[in-house]
Length: 227
Image (cartoon, rainbow, N blue to C red; front, side, top):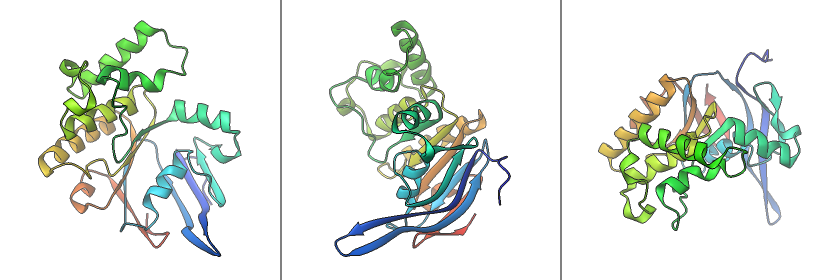
């Protein structure tokens, strides 16, 4: 049993999908915790349940059984609206394919997570410019996503994920579409964010990227091998 001193606690959690007449156990049974300020890699082969796990921790995918506590809050006991508020306050997500809006420029993409907040426009711009400076893109605020390199698009995605200053950053294969030099630059940026106190949970199948994290959780066939 955990004692609620951890930032994230996964308790006896499983996720099943119904496919025709059969049930697929995407996640069989997981028990682990992640502490505030950790940089954790979640590793495993394709189809092992890594991305499903990340989406559940992010409050986006209801587990079939078990509990997920974030800062002692049982996030799937919340209503849909409460869970949206929780995500806005606690979670930044870097999606595998960037998911930038093609017709919005860099600044507008980064401001998106603040759309549902009560922050005034001038303050939104100030916060967005601050994180764009942090990721080294302050000179490219007016560019559209397709005018950027893959590494620059990844940095915009990171800036968007951290603009609300969430305590938890979830990264799904953040270097999957990048060459090794650009990937190392992006990982260096994540390492800096972690050093500043951000808890980072990164899904990767690339063992080269594992060295940037402080701990690895191996996933195989929907179960944790090591935590």
